[in-house]
Image (tube, rainbow, N blue to C red):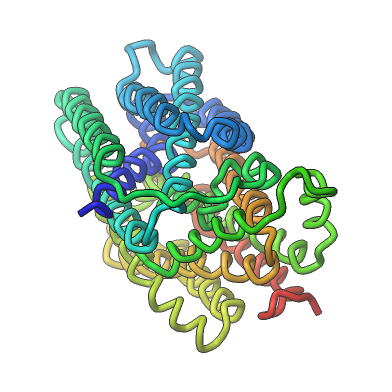
Length: 457
């Protein structure tokens, strides 16, 4: 069970990622009374800091490989209280002080989560028989994601007098799970292999997250789904880092690597569609709980809808992998985008009580998310050759930039006249369903410059 001992940490990492990207905006707006404008600005700033800190954390881990366990322990010790503090802010009102609290706790949680996650993925890339361990990581990550979808939603939909005590119990359970996972990893994980030193130009740029497939970021960049081909992609990315020349060689610094990527037409052709697609995923992820509560009138079912969404993504991954082998990843990615557009066009037509129809939308959008998870890394890998480290780093930064910009959809909603808890309306529908369709269609149009073999026409 050594692979399970390694994979267990995937559960608490996924449980922390979901509220960071999906649940907290609605919680702070609807339950704690924070205004949408300031909330969106806080999310944008915190996510932008998260985007910029990954290279620094990766550089730190790269420079101190012998201290990886200590860094992971420190990250977990910060993440656990930050997780609790985000769910249980002090009674400080709903104004500027609450915004400052949220900003500080988000920065701490993002930093701690990234530190643990980067070191964890790098650890997995160095395991003997890494595919089995990665499969456990992905499967338990999916389990953690589903738990995080269902439990907070059930708590918030229950007796208001019991919400705080139940969130405290949930945070305590999370702390115990994190402790158990770290202990299992340090004591019972499979042995690691001895590798050649990784190039600082890649790891310092991307914080070792080149081992992570750079799918669209909420929940995509930090959330995992169970599928061995995706784990294999991560392992190949780590292999690509190890094959890169040492930093002492001429012209192999990170600036030279980025320069090479900037001159590569195939890589440039993927930048815009990847960013637009990531934005089309990040916006509805930020607004989903607002839509479920106010447009559909069913906040108590938000956990079930999220579980349907992520479950469909996980189940769709093997199908997209098989289709890509037969028809090519580019064609299948376009079809996945069309499926997502169809789903969100349906969401634009829904109103109070249309719960079954929205469940179908979640299944369609979730299946399309499976394409977003599985196929862009394949296309990127074809274009990058042996520059996987810096390439995946660049694309992951684009995904986090999309997440940061998605936070600004909240001030936009406020400007359009939407107020949480007062019903939906055209402004919420436009932001949640129509705007993502527009970005998805623009991404499809931008894909016209790409070909299946990673070249450009």
